[in-house]
Amino acid sequence: MISTFNLWFIVAPSILLAAVLLAVLSVTEENGKAKKRCSDRIWKLCIATYVVVTGIMLAKLLVAESILGMIEFWGGRNTRAIRFVSVGTFYLVAALWSWLVYSISTAARERYYTRVERDCKHGRSKDDVARRERATRSSRRQAKLDKKRKRMIESGKIYVLEPKQAPAGPNAEQQRAINYRVNQLLERYDIEERDDLNCLCNDDGGRHLISKYIPRGVYKYFVAVNLEDTSEAPIFLGCDPKKTKENLRRYLTEKEQAQVCAKKIKAMNQ
Image (tube, rainbow, N blue to C red; front, side, top):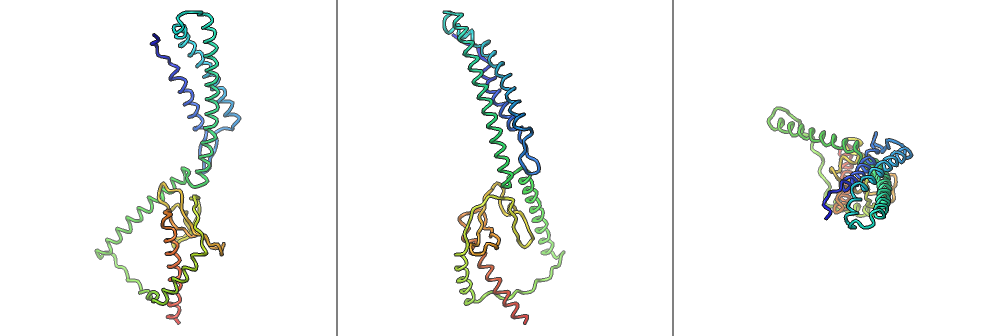
């Protein structure tokens, strides 16, 4: 009974694993862009050399460790013929394995490069993730400062003047007109799903990346596009598809209410 352990059970998968690791390490990211550490021609030459050398080593290992087992399996009959056929078979197996290693490592390199390039294009690169993490830490620090300031105001250490009273909101008749106007505006907008995290948007604090408003680990969001006025910037509606229409209605309602309040203030000043 054959009881010896063949080392090629470990060596053969290790050759493939090492080739795939080399393929992944040959692709890097620099300044938010995917980059290959060497050209495809040099890479294919190096990996071809690697599979030839490892293929010869694997073939010798197969012959050294398995030829005696083959003889034992066949009971010593036609030993010379069995040896000849076995050696040829083992070299053929090693050659096929080398070809498989070359094909898988080359495909893994191209696939990983495409993935890194796509991540960089859509704001999911290492630099983009690090930038969002810094923005998250900054917002947390600001939240702590705001909380501390609120406590100091409540304790009387900081005195804040009360803001002037804003004019009253729209009355019932104006609110009905606003709702009617909002329903008309909703027909002009189309809701789209996007995944470009490098897009910029405007708010009261200035111009920011859209990723500022997207939770960590989320790479898709929704915007409303004005079909009649293409010059209008898309309206950010969040990441939850169930709340897009509600958020769009709220945005348009607040916009119409602001216009009504502005008219009231102008009338008061006159």
